Image (cartoon, rainbow, N blue to C red; front, side, top):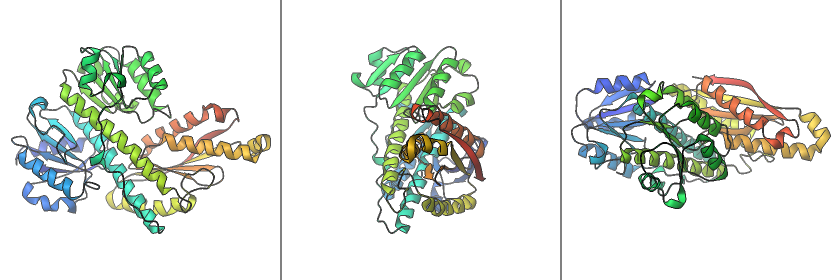
Length: 422
């Protein structure tokens, strides 16, 4: 599920750590376990995330997390605190500096998988932000990282609750941290789709107590919509209804909670996803600022051919060193000769700009979009194996090919080549 995530487990209890390591390894993680007395080694092993295992007492673990957050909040790996305390009774429930997520034992493998997926996505964005800052320096451009995850505010999210919940609308709004003007509740997937298309929401929470297929169809539609593509989606369901949990994840669900749920934990998980999405937006803004004349294509505003080769040299070298996957997808725009003849070269340029803008909107925050040549575009996807990359690129091509402004000119883009380093 997660390729080559490097997870460091800091064991504050000194026992039964093998089981946690095995569960993480089953998710595709490379795991190392150390004791708190060895914390000076944390930076020696380039971790993608840190699990602080403190089942008996979380006090020492939170002290360590606080110290690391104060020392370097821009580059520190995301941190998960594991304790035995129920969420509602735990004073370290994710609001503590340096702790990004919380797990209360015992927890289901679905919960662990959701944490790893969420944090690996964040870590990749963080690393790529640093890489692009370094690239700006190579071009002689002064830079300062402005995207600081610890400073991202997730308060007052605009939330759509769709499906079936036991709480009243006002109670559910309070649980999810949304006020009345920023909260809507519906029971039908089609109504949810209409509201999402017409309005602006920070997250979707789906309450499923029957067939999952209508809700998974809704999620798939969201992931094919260029405006909603990155919308955080949380599913609340019974274990017997859920079936294979991999299916919702593959469809685009970000997190799954099994009933009965704790309201505080639901709020915490939603806050994390909203923070991550708002961080992604700030990362996009930082990337946008990096697209200046020295690094950008003058027509589309995407990164240029020359920047791509400098960037790939750094990315591929690091991927080989740390055993990570990198996928590069090429898009070729078909029919440009006839389009230029029919609509003029100015019309062809407008079409290329539109296609470039769509591709840029449909990729993830950590991906790089490039105009490679006159009719070719490139998308670089760090930490992405071939199969999910192919799925993502086919989705991008499908959206572009069915967008009205491109179909009117009979243009189409098609994935041309995949190169994978793993």
